[in-house]
Length: 152
Image (cartoon, rainbow, N blue to C red; front, side):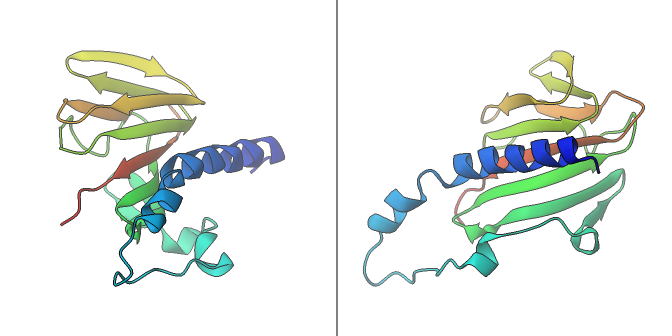
């Protein structure tokens, strides 16, 4: 990967991780003394992409930088989708989420409307609104998914 692409990927991840963790200090301050407290170390706070830890999908793969067990349901995932494919059909769910396009051309669907966008574009999916993202190009689509799952 070119140095400039690596730089924007890492910058994108930093921005997304700041978004994900901006309330963690407040949450830790409000924890009851009897709650178990997760200890964060340099080893578990750094997650560098590793091809052998990807999860295959029917149209590409996913890589979890932060799964829902890492920090109270907040997640950061990279999805990679083959040309002219989609991971799944438009859908809706209780959680809202953001997509951040890293590479390729994404077609974003939101409540009956669609738009095609390129790299460095964020897309917001409000709670309970039909949404979807697909690859509208001839190259791989890479995007980040930022979401907080509801507690069980």
